[in-house]
Image (tube, rainbow, N blue to C red; front, side, top):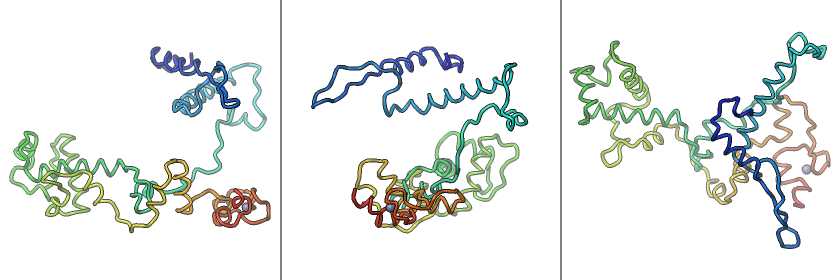
Length: 278
Ligand SMILES: [Zn+2]
């Protein structure tokens, strides 16, 4: 019902309900599997889970908002002023563990090699200005030259005020490109005579010194372990000392060994008796 009220197509709702209702489990006892036990709900680790959770939370929030319309409903004394019927979530800190720029860096330079789409998009658009600059033999480029550029110098000419949105965007990218590289060097982003978006993306980003952790990060195949290791190598694990530095009130002591040592990364990995015993 909830999904239908959101306007999700019936067919899609049927698929989701199929996933939710036909889960079953069997238990491994003495090396053999038991009969299947019917269950309700999603299977463990189902990628659909976060989406359904968000939808249900949204529905619950909207339902709770209507509570105040019920005549018998009484606000909590401190919530009446704010019309507050519920508190949806509490997040102690919205700090990012690590900057997005760092995440987008190559693995060899301490990053995770996630593509920065903003930069990739700009690099892709640079292919258009390369084509215009090199006067490629395409109809739209001939049209650009004959209508807008004419005999002017594409590198420095003013953007035509009568140009359509698309053409103005091409000129915007030209301005962006001029800030990072000159037109005389545009061919350095080419591979075998063709503009390479990947080359442009790699060369136009900030260059960082290489570090020796690449082999370490690629050594294990479990992504979650890799990620925790990567956070540790970047000193970004949310240990108690870092939470305190963020102004969050927590007990600094290590909860594992209880020998009154502060929970720092060095303690967890190299000093803690409990960690050592594992
Ligand atoms: Zn400890």
